[in-house]
Image 1: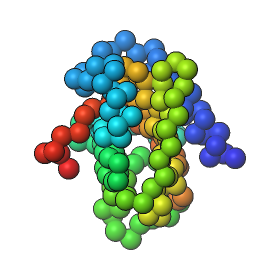
Image 2: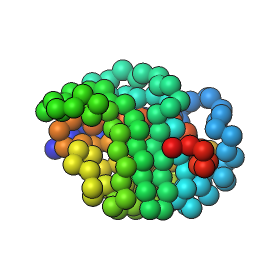
Image 3: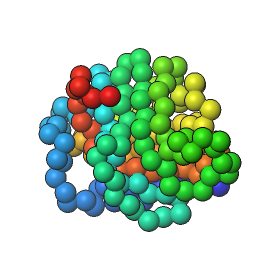
Image 4: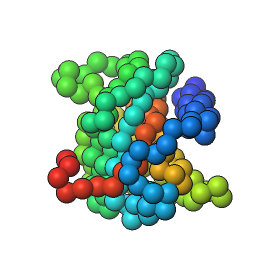
Length: 165
């Protein structure tokens, strides 16, 4: 129950932050291109900031991203928050995984926003990823995990290129 409330509050606060933002989309994608990339399931969510459940928006460098294709998801995102179990390998602190066995559900909302739910079946830690994409290419990603507090990311949708990871 607490996890659901935390995710809902995170979604609401990020939606308010995103809708009040006056920054322009610097992703190089036009409004319709961002929607087309999402519908083709060939895009990169480039994280620009992280909001742990404890609060405090923190900016990120541009290398953190979630790459989505029709058959693979590559997640390379940092983690900040409370972990209920410590990993044996300190390199496993962040969210760094590939998934080829996942559920992907896309729902169009009336305001042009696209809500995407990704459930990786071959990852023990990440339970669900909720990506909300606005028509102008801004996006918010909420990640729910088994042994860690949920975390939210704000970013943009950009096109995939062959020379990236």
